[in-house]
Length: 387
Ligand code: ATP
Image (tube, rainbow, N blue to C red; front, top):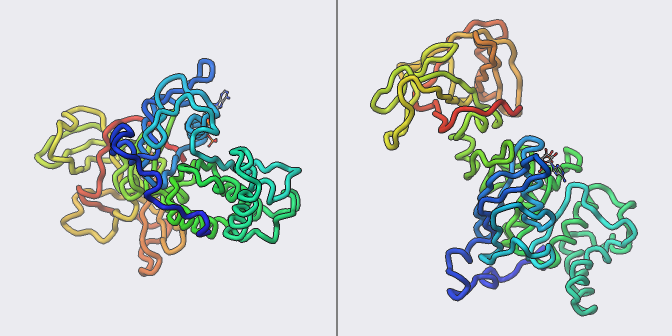
């Protein structure tokens, strides 16, 4: 796919272009809002995408991911806010003037066109000379390993082949940004991992920014340089995957992301570097940042603890203790997950590596513990379980 690689300096703007810092951004959304009648689908979404970044918009069905993507593409007209592409105001520009390409989940191939014709379509729209189009189509078909399909029509292609054709069609114009709406959702599960790796390598090689919509957190965490978690039309948290996984900022993010145990309660004690929190299943110590005001006595708060940070091998550091009955043991690849029932009826998950000897069996009553540092205090209470 080297034919698509372009000089990374090609798009770097000069200081005359309204400032270097802005030109380093491929995309900026400032407070985007979109309503459909009385319904708010996107509510104040702001986002900065650096050059060549892989961004995943992640969230449950109906949270506004696709509408946000369609606003970026120019397929929806936002009711408020600004869209800047490559540092330039593009909010009112039609889709074809935006230096972007879009790939849809159903691939949206033209049924009556051959593969070669559809791949060249974008260049035809740009009124490129016929000889140049033919040369570029040949190069791109070869780089996507679909040259042998050039004269075929979409209905004679497999799902994986259709996906390559759609991608080749989107990439041939070498857009600044590629927008992808659940691009591998229609593929067989067995194909997805391979295709994900190919797409990640393609993205890195070409330096094109990807904005990828998904409700699948495995996709988002394995592909994204930046993961943006949305809920009810708003961004709940954005950051690198490790940050979203290790430091969920809200109760919603903690409950949506796999492997977290969520606790809600109120502040019973404020100490120098920690808080004492009373919950329905006991009182726990949670470390808190030393800077900033932090929650006050009596305030409602929530915190989460990752399943792999809870243990039955207790030491003095495990100041938080909870006793519960194991109801099931499940295997996720190399991880063994123990499911416990808490006294408030919620589930507590405890993960151990499958390579370690099994210690906990269903039906067993176990005292579990975690450190104050393992508990992550959320900045805002609210949100409901997303899965
Ligand atoms: P999914 O993962 O299911 O695709 P999503 O997060 O992409 O969901 P959107 O497609 O952006 O969600 O939709 C957000 C909300 O806006 C939904 O409640 C949807 O029904 C509504 N919506 C989207 N497009 C329209 C429209 N053209 N008219 C009315 N409501 C719409």
